[in-house]
Image (tube, rainbow, N blue to C red; front, side, top):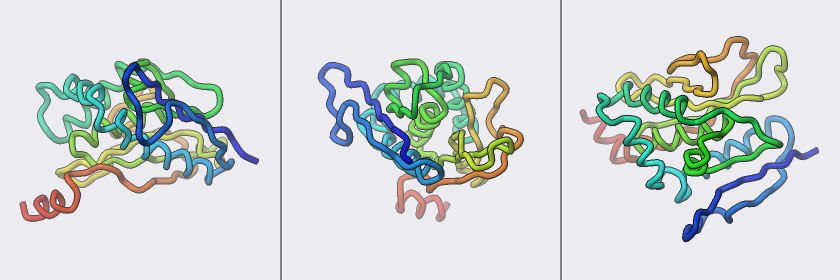
Length: 200
């Protein structure tokens, strides 16, 4: 059995995407394989012109971190910007949208907010990764996703789930039965950045 995944990247006049057609759909498997496929698409959305390289995303980053001390405070600032500017809304089926679309619409579900936060943090040089969780009442279903950012000083992964009203940077839901963490994206400039960071 297969679930439907619709990837929506609204095209505003004069914009085209080399990585995705404006909107398309495809089928993904049920269960953990489908969740992994969805996360793979989320990671690809980071690299589109409407992702990390988007001027709209960069403007949101500038708004979020203006006047903020570098490091952990930037992570906090991005978390609260997403939490305060993007309204949580569910959807019919599984629909993914670009970070730029999430900003322009002002709403998105957990995967949309996770992709936006990851894009904003990656543009600041932070490494991010997606984490999916299954709760105790439904341990076979990875039903929620959020992003984690790696603190540049401590190397610690900080959970960021702006979809929950009472959440704060570092908060994770209670009652997690199991979780999956996916390969990181972004970082401090690739191999040379890691080399210079090691030499400091």
